[in-house]
Figure 1 (cartoon, helix red, strand yellow):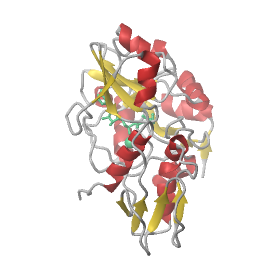
Figure 2: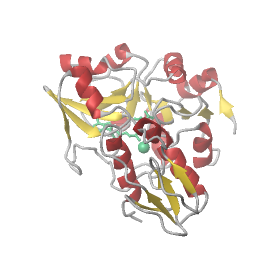
Figure 3: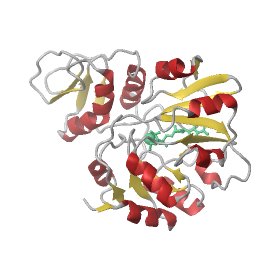
Amino acid sequence: MNTQTVAQAAELLRAGQVCAFPTETVYGLGGDATNADAVLSIYETKGRPRFNPLIMHCADLAMAETLAEFSPLARRLAALWPGSLTIVLPAKPNNGLADVATAGLDTVGLRVPDHPVALELLRAVGRPLAAPSANPSGKLSPTTAQQVWNGFGGRVPVLDGGACRAGLESTIIRVEGDRLVQLRAGALAREEIEAALGVAVDVAEKGSAIASPGMMASHYAPNAQIRLDAVPHAGEAYLAFGRSRSFEGPMRNLSEAGDLREAAQNLFSMLHELDAVGAGMIAVAPIPHVGLGEAINDRLARAAAPRGG
Ligand code: TXA
Ligand code: MG
């Protein structure tokens, strides 16, 4: 694997090239969000449908405020930055973003990542970076530089910042007047946001257009099939959680201690690893639906969903 320094990555990005970079959630495939060609290269590299808008990564709140209208409630949410939280807000007119980055919507998804390397890169580039997860569309999100490198067959430059701390994508919250609506469960548990703000967070109805433009049921698909809430059979691979039965075949445990934070951090990596042993089926143990379990179960359901084409 061949990696870039922050200065090299910043130079590539300022020149309109794409470059993968670390965040605390997952690796992002970055491009200058103000440069339509750069953003189109992101879509092409991932094989991503154009109707699925990207998240704009900002160095700080000041940069984010050049892109969107922040209500007082939005500002209270933004106080959780840097962090694993994407806020969807009305876009400011003439904010300089390439139309393709927002897929033509009049809202924009923003986040300030909580990772020193990402923040250093954003400051060096001096512009917002559009960045989806750095995986070919529909595949597992990468939590290490090596997974990014392998996923794109070495064709994408990578800035290596080590393994991602959270291991799951950011939580996406849309601010609608005085309402907060969660569009995607993620690395910041809904309960934590509610506790920090003292405001209830509603959950967008599954499959509603607003819930996620272009968010597909089948996603995060490993090559193997997935069975949920399962007891493993011979010949399968097993993804356990908590104290588990012994199992003869290939097996990983998301968290022997039954800790959901540890499980989130391990989820994509362990799915990658079990996939690599070539099992046709991965049986996954039940995982509680509380706290980060909401996001973990969401990703597992997508990984298990029937796949089109
Ligand atoms: O943790 C993360 O969020 C990672 C890292 C790299 O920051 N990024 C990530 O991006 O997961 P991506 O592109 O895989 O997911 C972005 C999601 C999509 O489901 C998209 O539909 C939604 O954000 N989104 C972006 N802008 C939106 C908007 N204006 N309204 C509603 N949803 C939006
Ligand atoms: Mg993704």
